[in-house]
Every structure is written in C-alpha cells, then in structure tokens.
Image (cartoon, rainbow, N blue to C red; front, side, top):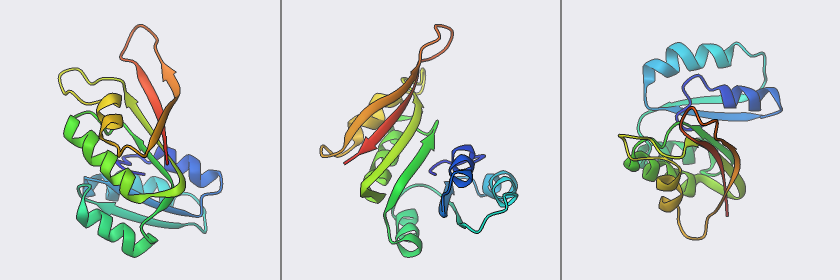
Length: 152
C-alpha cells in the first residue's frame, strides 16, 4: 500500500488472505506510531514490511530487494492531491505492478487548489496501462471520489 497512513485497505487485505504486505508512507512517525501498532495487532503469519520515504528510486530499490520488484496488488488512497505526487505514484505503480496484477487508486476527481486528482494520475501512466473507474461517489455535497483500477 502506497501512502498507507492507517493502512485500512491493507488491514482488509490481511483479513482476507494476504500473505505478504509492503506498507509505504512518507512519514516514519506515522509508520511507527499509527500504522505498525494497528497492523501488528492482527494475529497473522503474514510477512509484513514497513517502508518510509518518498516514492522513487530508493523505495523502488528496497521493494525490488525485499519483494522481487513486482506486486499482484497495489493499493493507494488520497495520494494524488498534487500533480507531481500523481505522477510519482503513476511511475511507482508502473514500475512495480506485476503484468497480471491490478492496482486500485482511491482519489478525488480533482483536488481544488492543489491541481492533482484522477486525471493527473491516469495521464501520467505509460500508454500500455489500462484504467477504469470501478466505483464513484457523487453525493452533490462534496468532491467527486473515484476508485481507479489499473492493469496492463
């Protein structure tokens, strides 16, 4: 999970049979004080790894060393709020998504005042990657929210 924070999507995956998790967040304090306690509270035999830092070569090198570099499922939520973050996320997904894998990115359609969002992420993916919106919320009271499925 990229930008894991509380790691709620990963906790769901863990409870539904995930055997290995790689939890990534920029903020080491969040990983140590919020993510790790909630994930490690689960009684599991799953392999769980925590990574702190920006997306890019350093993180990619660690993921390649520890996990062989590719994942069959990548999750991320609320991580595309600035165009440069959407682009970095798209490049990280493209670099680490297994050819038969899927990524699910939960995002607002547009982040007002910040410029990122669904389109910023989708347009930053390589041309051979496919996307579809698998869920959308348009309640008329807040920003439109989408979950985007990414696959090759």
